[in-house]
Image (cartoon, rainbow, N blue to C red; front, top):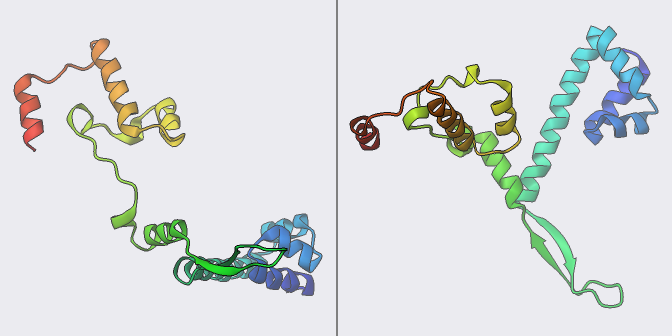
Length: 167
């Protein structure tokens, strides 16, 4: 591996950022991306450096979530009067979601008319609305309502609705 490649990878492990690593190592971004495309050994070394950088970022997130960060408060004539330790609930939430996605990830339960919809068969428009943050249940319910109004889907009988409510 070339010295410039080693310098970039070392800087990347420290900075966790391609642009910053380019500045520190004085390697152009285009060189880095060209090496990734053309040099399998470099690509493998970069993948390892990326894992190490990710571990470093995760360690910092854990530190800020659990140990907190001392923040100056009560300034007088440019001098802080005290320091307050602040913790990051947001980082803690992300760490929990990453560590235990089955318990902390966002979940959606679809019932009634929507329970048998294969989400992989949805058209692009409703998927784009859901991806943009619209409530998935509302999007799917609107689609079902539209299908009923067009006569493509029948509404359940009152007995079927009562059965669904009991489940």
